[in-house]
Image 1 (cartoon, rainbow, N blue to C red):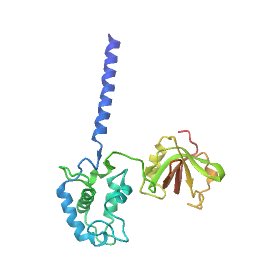
Image 2: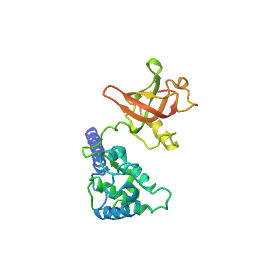
Image 3: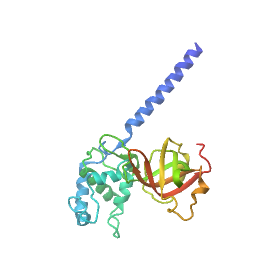
Image 4: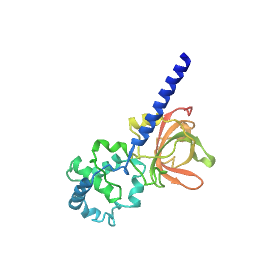
Length: 250
């Protein structure tokens, strides 16, 4: 009897954990969940017209010298990242001029979301919510596109013909920092479990005169660079390599 009660309790706890996991997964927000209001987008449109359109064009095409703020090129640059990265970029505009304030920048961000056909909702977008909102395509998460700046953790090994490889690597993840990772980024990378991806690292000998690849063979590293993915392999044009551990045991 006691054993039956114990098993029932364990089952209840297990089911509770599963239920909580499902709720967490369901409540994770993306740009398709109506994260801004139509009123915010309208305010953002007015700010854009008076502050941004002269350079970025009224139709968001960007003109000759600036990239578009609407469409596939724009979305490919920000997909598979959180909204706070795009917000940081919006806040850097206009360059060399006084800040507009977070509220205005959130309205501008709402306008950009609206212009890229993401749906409006019933609650206004708040700056503190941005890190938890994912930018992705309508069909859900997708692999990071070619040319994106990515972050990978894996085992640094010598490959054929004096090449260098990353084995047991994690799936390439988008990053916005091309240079040496911050302390928090190093901590997060160190904590990552190794994966099953293999990629060739390009330009290893040139990204830093102080990095000597032979000295770090077999080490767990964090590599950053631009993704070059084909049907047969994955390559990363290296911008930075940070050594995380002297072995690849985990």
